[in-house]
Image (cartoon, rainbow, N blue to C red; front, side, top):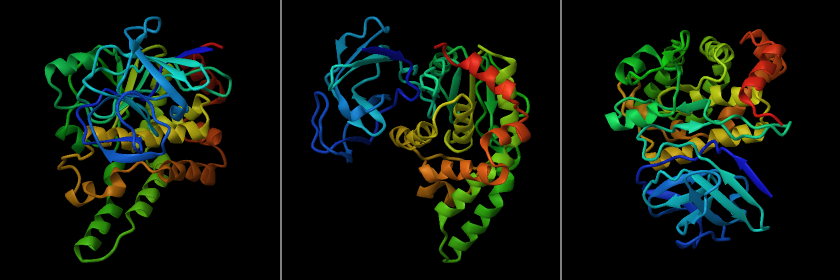
Length: 358
């Protein structure tokens, strides 16, 4: 049976220092060994598909009907199928599984784009069997400092609206490129400055020789996001309702924390199951490892940027966000209604505009 969808997390990546691959695998196709993280060669694309461990052959092409060129150098990983070699404009892949079934996926990435963690949310399946439409909902990290040819590649996505979730200081340090899109009013927030107080105290503790449970501190931050970032989240989702069918990109600096929460809540609104949403959130860490996960910024203290726990996308982080909502409001639906001003009718409209028909 042939299924066609747009994958949500296939990325064109620059040369990387490490990839995830089956232990003992060699180039030339899949391996049935257990996953391990090993220093190895560059990754040009991550093809995100269900059950990557069962994939037995991979083909690529320029469109869904001509993905017939065999890809010889790839490996399975927890993030999907890792394709080695130079990026190519052939952006469609056909996967053949062990049981003979096939899946054709269009990764929706821009080959060689030097932007941080850009992905399309399209392709995720909902409980009704519908899928999130491709080419309408994009997420990323900062987009500044792109060469002109890369800006042109970014522009080719046709993005019409952008929601910048960063603080004023972050925006001034790394401004978005001046492309033909409209900035969504209300996405700017001072919440990041407010949340810095706990991190500032933690840094002082470290500087004085004390210990800090960084992971727990980050979990506390994620628990506060649903209320701290209510205004920008509300602005983003309202814009999606007001501008159906017009591609939108939302982003922060790293493209995983504020952006990750915004993406998770949106996918849940659309009816994607919670485990899939959590998996989408955790993909960012692997993708950012390939792209180089360090951020140079004067908007945040160096001691904070160097914390491994802050660079991670642990499932416990996004789970803390969802648990916090349920603890405070009883359910996600009540949070959507009371905090984000999204009624049941609004959610139904979002699904009508951003999901495929059955």
